[in-house]
Image 1 (tube, helix red, strand yellow):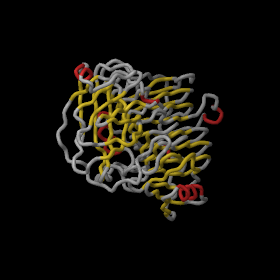
Image 2 (spheres, one colour):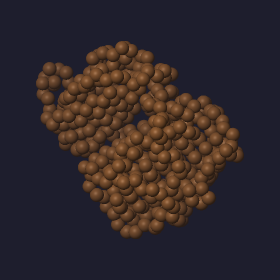
Image 3 (spheres, helix red, strand yellow):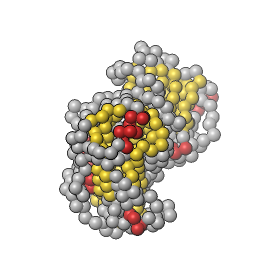
Image 4 (cartoon, one colour):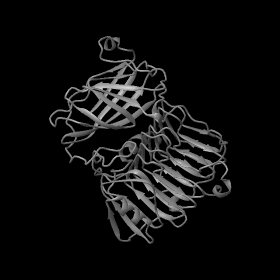
Length: 457
């Protein structure tokens, strides 16, 4: 079920009636809320909420709503949630507290229900400003078995509920395109024997073993730190497969494929590609609520494709090149293709690029990125092509922080409530063939196909 509620002025009667209490954060002058039930099982459900600030910028926020059928929120990610009686309060976490005008924040939660009725809230308030609206009854998602434990927060919990929908019958393209096709191509484990893992110890051993292998992840694996991935590995997620609390480290190895996994609440990076690792394909994964980078590529790594991934409820997304003083290792390398990714409210580094040339950023969907979309720095060359920017105040620019500018060529992009970005300089030519989708169609293409659970592997 989905609720869209808007208002342009405060509703003081809610405050005077005692339905709302004051908060210390700056008040908004209007807001919009999208509320949905992503999955539902006997005794519980997962909810997703996106709140958009239509008023003045705020430096912190609390969203409140009330349930009418006894639902009880138990755990949240992307926000801190509490409940008193029927009223739920969700307060920002450190990376999504600042909301500019028209900026959005997304969070999710687990809750219990009575197995017979799960109506959506009838109203919301952002910093004591009512977002009024109404809902119509909808049929809840198909019942699925209850998860063992709720989805992760920090510190990472155990097992989240499965994804809300199975892979679509018409699947998005899953052919390797981009830089990972070069330098001999990327085949991962190829036709090697398949090993299915369900525990952290089994996964660690399989990833770190010598020789080619196809590794299937089943269920939720809770772990910490970084798990070393050796050369010639294909890592595939079965439907609903989740890595909670840790990440993968591809360091100096080559020919690795990582697909169809959900990464949550990692305590370092979700995927770290470093030390001249080459020929890496990172495809159709979902990333949320991690500590540092979702996909960081650095220290001379090369020939990488990052495709059809979704990043949400996260700050530092994709770093390319770790520091300004590493030119001797990085120049001539760090060639990466980013295509058909869904940067869903992810705050910054979508990507942030040093030294690599050409880096190809094409046919991605950017939604409400609070910091910026793409940054080209330290003499990098970035082609930003055929992307869809919606409610992004800073789609792309040259230089970032203390990093000097690179070059950026922008062409055939589509802007909705977003300015054109800052471009300049020239970029080396793209050596591989690719099909460029019309930018105005990218939103529908990417939202239908990006992220884990959208393909069968």
